[in-house]
Each structure stands twice: as C-alpha cells, then as structure tokens.
Image 1 (cartoon, rainbow, N blue to C red):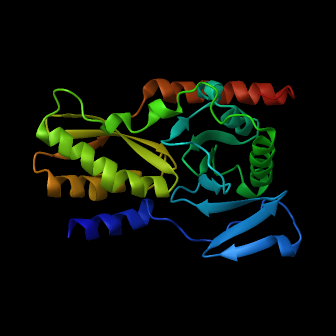
Image 2 (cartoon, rainbow, N blue to C red; image 1 turned 180 degrees about the vertical axis):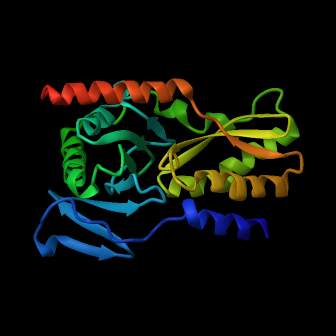
Length: 259
C-alpha cells in the first residue's frame, strides 16, 4: 500500500515525463531518431537525449556517455563550479542557473520562466558536445568517489531507527529521485523529524512540498513508526550566494564578459 501511495505521489513530481524534447539545432533528418518518448540528436558521432523533469525550469540531458564514475555532484551556482570543468563550461551559457551531475546525466536549471528553453537549449547542447571533445575530466578535484551517498552511510552511534531511514532513502527513494535528474540527501533525524535536502531538478519543483509530505513521509512512516514528519532543509548560505551571483552574472554579461 505504501509503495502504491509513494508511486502515485511521485507521478506528480518525481516520475519521468516521457515527452519529446526539442532538438538543440537543425540537423539532417537522417540524424534524428525518436525512441520511447526521447528525442535523440546525433552530433559528430555523439548523440544527446533530453528528458523533461517535473520541474519546468530543469531539463535532463543524457549524452550517452559516462558523466560521473559514481554518485552525484550538485553545483547550485557559478562559485560552486570551481571543481568541475564541465559545470564551468555550462555556466558560460546565458540563462543557466544551476548544474547537477549524475552517473549518466546532466540536469541544467534555468533562471526563471522568462528564460526559454528553445533559446538556451542549443547552446547547452553545444557546450556539452564541445566539452566531451576536449578530453578534460568532468571533475578536476579528484573528489568524485568521496561524494557517493555519504549521507546514508552507517555511522557509529546510529540507532536502528536511523539505520532503517538511511536504508530506505538509499534503496527506495534516491533511485526514483535520480531518475528525474535530482537527488535527496539525509540531513538528520531529531525528535521524530527527518530532515532532507533536495538537489537538482527537485530544487524549486512546484510539487516538492507535496512529494516530501505525501510521498516520502508516508513511506517512511509506514516502515518507521518513529517518524512523525519530514522537513526540507534550506541552505540559507546557498540561497544568499545564488542571489549574489545572479547579480554578479548580470553585471558581467552586461559588460560583455564571459563568466
């Protein structure tokens, strides 16, 4: 029963939307293929698929090549992209607000509704294609392996309740969230409240609060009676940083300088 409830709720925010994506640029029809709701574009022996997410300001790009060896990496603003040549490359595209990397996908978040995908998507496709032809590493800080689900790793002193919550997040919840181009981090459990942080396409998703309360909370409460509620953790520092860098980016681009 809990699984069915979880699936229904996630169909609103965390299930994959199989709608055709617009190609990043005009290519010969022989180079375009439609497959199970994806739109595929072949470019210089490389093809990139796009997949809609529940968040209209996020789009998932699948370059048909490995992006990260394992785990995920979140780059919510330009400042956070210092350790990733790929993320820095994508932030050069005007209108890109955030970049999220997964094992085989790249989720890009645009600033707002006024920024149109049909305008910036060709530049994102070009940036991805250009990057993977350079041979540069996706991460230049060598920290990919240290980012793998550290939040759900058992720690000394974890109670049975906490261990069960972590296992549910790792095995039942996280895979679904990552399928939609995002991730969810366990931030703690105190006084019956599970604290979670959303990343990627789940950040700012219109239905994220519904998903947390009616989807994830219901599942956790079904298996862990000690759970009273689920709360989203908002990083205030990150929030301020995003605002500051949006202003800085606008200033830089008005002067015609690439960030």
